[in-house]
Length: 311
Image (cartoon, rainbow, N blue to C red; front, side, top):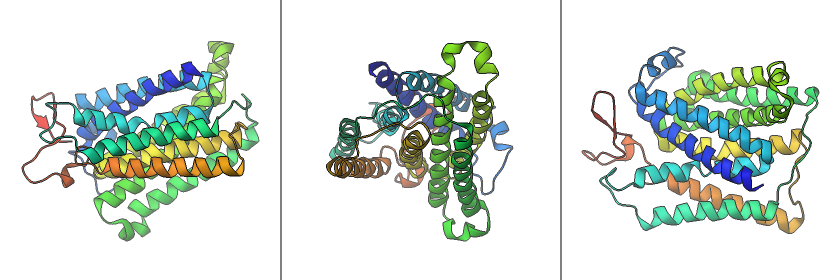
């Protein structure tokens, strides 16, 4: 379990780096419509490629973590991603603003909530292999939720989420759900790592992972391009571990403590986590350019043209 926790923390740091770099790279392409060419444009920007490399590295650590621990343990730890985003913004010299007490309070609340949830739930391993028939409903439900989000953002329901922050939030939620499904596929794939390269190369999880991972990358790029990071990041942070944990219970028969008191304490801990994420994501350190006062720039990073880009 200790290896799973450590690897999960490193994966969380990598995904936080990915979110920050990809938002910087995508900020110039705040697309109004779904655009498959967006990735082609972003791929020519070094800072976005750095984010992509960090995402791939995060995947590698996530695969290793899931090899040593259950989804219900690994994915909630990955929710610490937002704390690392916060830390990037709080580095001295990176910002013209200071860390306020309420920012630290939100960070502590989120960390305490995750720790309390894991302590009370005591997630344990389930089965390693999932019957193929069970993957179909999990995949279809996930696909349905993503399609609903795309319809709300780009389709007939678009008028109800017309503002950029709302669209970013909806796409961020869809991305989080999609990443949760990807995590479940990674868990299935990780169980075959000990059987050799041939077993992995001839198994279906590898190819489902490639397809769903690529589709989720496109979805995440649009979520980061359409609006503020503060709007999309909570969906990444909350729904990824939540959906993955639910799939862990449904698909892999992972177990958590389910007594009446345990469930109450788990719900309370999750409420604290969600409250901390909501407060932290709207911090003046993480809030996107729309939340920064005129003339104030937040989260500077140098680009290939030696410019300073506002996160």
